[in-house]
Image (cartoon, rainbow, N blue to C red):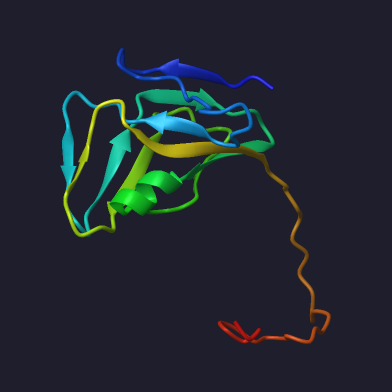
Length: 144
């Protein structure tokens, strides 16, 4: 599979896998200058790229584990979804869950993008559902 992408800014970087078996492609901040993110705050960080995801697939935007652990930097709507018909700039909603201000540097690896197949089931209205042991037990009802 090939995924076409477009650079919307000269400083934009191609999504990159950092090892041959990595599932995710790192996304980079496309910034003119460093950007401070205070604890508890969130911001949409531009990547400077747009993609043409093939029909039947999506791109999921997820946090990078290293900066999540070391800095407390997360992706707020994780995983974020880039639909196959979206052609605008990919922006990553970052949140600082740490105790110190985080400086987002130009070209910093800020998230990872996973390409995954999407199922499109049809929903069917019915009068009742089959019974299960759990039934309508909600949060924590399975013992965890």
